Image 1: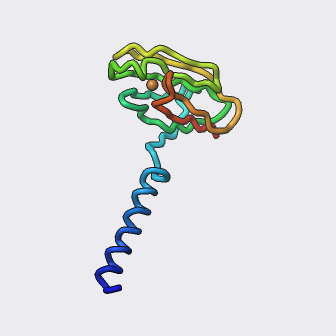
Image 2 (image 1 turned 30 degrees about the vertical axis):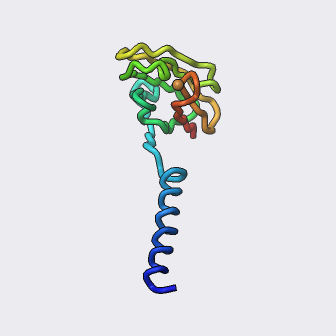
Length: 125
Ligand SMILES: [Cu+2]
């Protein structure tokens, strides 16, 4: 192989690895929630083509107060579900909807829209 061929093959491999890393391992927008004066962990989540932030880190044993604001009319995101906490809520467009519960055990708990197309994660430490 000539040097140029080696270079092209090598660049291709590097590029493939980078793309794979980006899709599977790149860190997502993670948010560590501070405990407010009331003792609750308050987070504002924007719903627009997904959840922002979509990875929320909280502490166990303290109430978590999630306020969702849906900024789109797509039917997909009209409901948010936390199956592990038996919580769900309808999210009318433009309105703030608050869900409150207290995670008692650490772990990773998913939340999602009705059909599971939009997903987020609640990490309890
Ligand atoms: Cu959906």
